[in-house]
Length: 73
Image 1: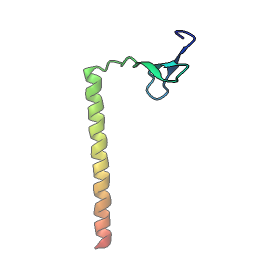
Image 2: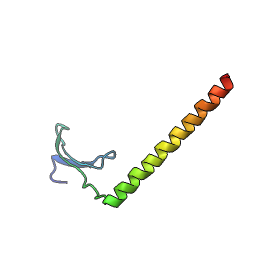
Image 3: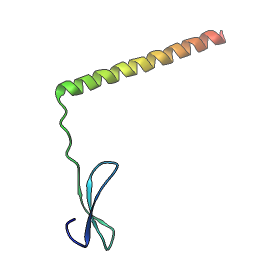
Image 4: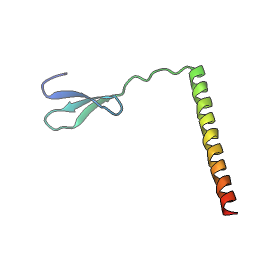
């Protein structure tokens, strides 16, 4: 803690460090967490996984609609 009238609190959602005035309860300063570097290869693999997931979901939805059409006919 910086001093008696200031509190440092870590946000559980975004992991930022907030400096709060103890008397007023106002946030004085916010320090964002350091972002982890993502290599190009890792980012490319993530995009490919997202594309595969999207294609799988599309195929499932297409088959579901196809079976619905057959059921209606």
